[in-house]
Image (cartoon, rainbow, N blue to C red; front, side, top):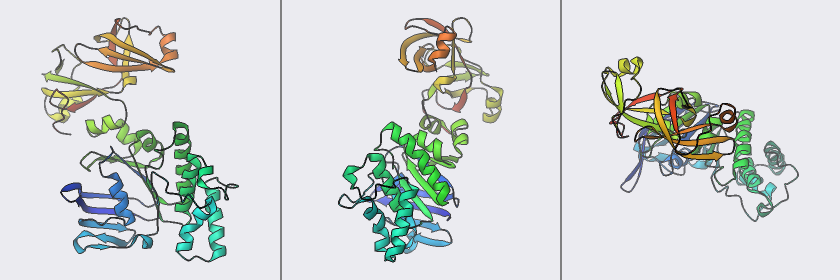
Amino acid sequence: MSEIEFRSVSKSFRTKKVLENLSFTIRPGECFTILGPSGCGKTIVVRLIAGFETPDRGTIRIGTTTVADGSKGYALPPENRNIGVVFQDYAVWPHMTVLENVLYPLRMQKVPKEEALQRAKMAIQQVNMEGLEDRLPYQLSGGQQQRVALARALVSKPAILLLDEPLSNLDANLREEMRFEIKELQKSTNSTLLYVTHDQEVALAISDRIAVMNEKGEFQQVGTPEEVYDQPANPFVFRFLGIANFIPVHARDGKTFLASSAKEFLPLPDTVQKAEGTSSGKFLAACRPMEVELSHTSGPLEGKVVRKALLGPIIDYRIDLGGTVVRAQLQTEEGSMKGLIFEEGDSCRVGFSRLLWFPGNGEGEVTHG
């Protein structure tokens, strides 16, 4: 197991800044996920750790070894970093069998033939590919090719495993299957794992800690899956971790009013007033669709159903609260049992099982937090 440390790392390509003074630490043996939108710099972090890129400024340390120092223009070659890498496109050799693909890194390292064969077979066994050693990649499914790429990364017994969007080319069922297998592999090999993705479901399922990165390459929050999901640091994190409702409101003396219509909304909680040091101003009230409670007769707010969609086990509604439309979801079975099936055009009463409050300008732009 090895620790990874970024200390004030910056990286640019010509005039485009990708990373600026990025600092973080990945603990030995943990599964650390960087979650962010496409183009935010996640892959550059992987390439910097692997040694395929060199930082302009700052240092990168693996264990006790400084592997890159931007101020000195120094970078330890990739082959000397004891790292396994799996990319989005698998990059398995099409003319090599499963066994030959897995053996390839050991041949490059000039590992003795018998030892290499034994280690390759062990890696193939780790990814549940026994019996397929003689197949070529075109004879394998996407999930099987992904397993070959994983076995090839594992065969060198790396202290660190870097996975860059490895499941994005798989269908939904295979993604779900493979994400659990990857977590089990990480536990069994005791490797330090960096997983890079834009898929919040994968991040929440496999991570010990998640770093949520914005479009500027900045970490917005680092924490356990529970922390970043239940206690988001700001609206960006909340939005990126799932379907989000944001309700812009204006607060006056603890009362709030919808920015869209000046219709009275719910009171600003005392805890929020105390934390912000004010009972007035502009805020965003945020919730998940499952946290919107619908009723025919009870609920603090009046709404109107503007859209209904049956999504199998879930009913998805769009509810107009007075110029602001929120998304509400409930289990289809629960809706049927409790008589909460609404049609488009129906009036309803609306409440919330939970609301988060973020300072904002009332139009959706966050001013701080």
